[in-house]
Image (cartoon, rainbow, N blue to C red; front, side, top):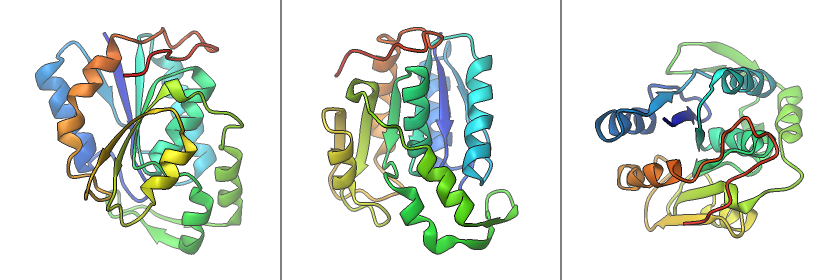
Length: 203
């Protein structure tokens, strides 16, 4: 039985549409699978510590899914734990993307008020892995992403399995059509407790 762990993006939460679409699909088509999507701390170091603790508690094959900033986090975790990861319009250099949001913020999903500062940009930089194992990743990208440049992700994860949805945006309207691919990943997984292993197959 595979566990799918979904990491939401900046100013988002487990109630996001892609998270709900994923959970509903797995419930209907893979009832033996389990799914979780934690509400992540707005502070990068805390968010990673939170997910690392969750990963350590899961004793079954694990697939990471990350959207936008969640894709950046999923990359760090995939390299650290040797996990496969599905990255949906992932952030590549979030410290640059989020610098303009430094200051007081309000998360519309949770109602939480918080403040981002320079130290949090430093935390993001510290979460950039020195190397990437392309076989760990499946990229799902929209060419009309209004937030991030999909071509940067293609370059950054060169050699990874990549699905490009022409004309799709950052929300990724076409995500539901990609969901069957999750079940294919499940049959190729090493146990996630093998810390130095990583997915070896590319579809």
